[in-house]
Length: 227
Image (cartoon, rainbow, N blue to C red; front, top):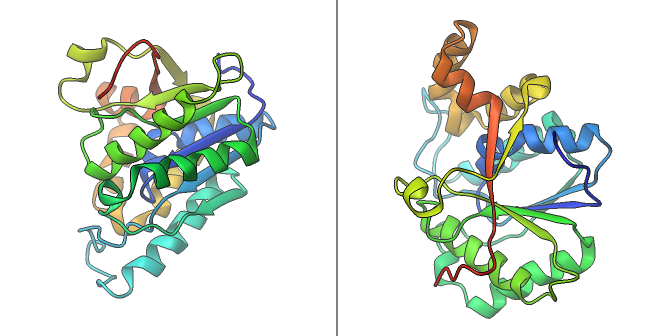
């Protein structure tokens, strides 16, 4: 059962990170009336996928991905989207303190009871890991009595070995159409997989159903040093 929160702050580096990992969860919170702020750090302008068949090029991709992100947020019922203006594939080179302050400013404004991001070191992409480090550092600086809960997504090959099974699983079956629509919205990045996914879901393929209908999170353990 998903817990009602005061305010949820979601921080990811790329458009479509939210669709794959938390679009069902965001949709559930919004249906509960919980305010959700999504801070998307870049426009994913260096993404390799340009549609299938291609309908974008290197010059048009940023605006296309911006439009896709807005459409995905509409599908989830999310009306507080922050596009933070950083450059794709460069977050790992940003000043650490600048990134921590960016997260701190967002938290001070929104006062979240729950923050959702990636898990540092276990989220595959350098932008994912750099974003996650900034989130963990910023939240860690808040006193334990005031600190929001931090849900993290980890999907590196050694995740289970390092962290064990996820602590939190959200069954998003009731909002599955919204999740599907959010994924479809990012067509430049997902069109190659959506037809196949739709077929598998219609056939009730057990692996596809398990992946699609359940969103899994690790509650960040503050006694664990990620560096």
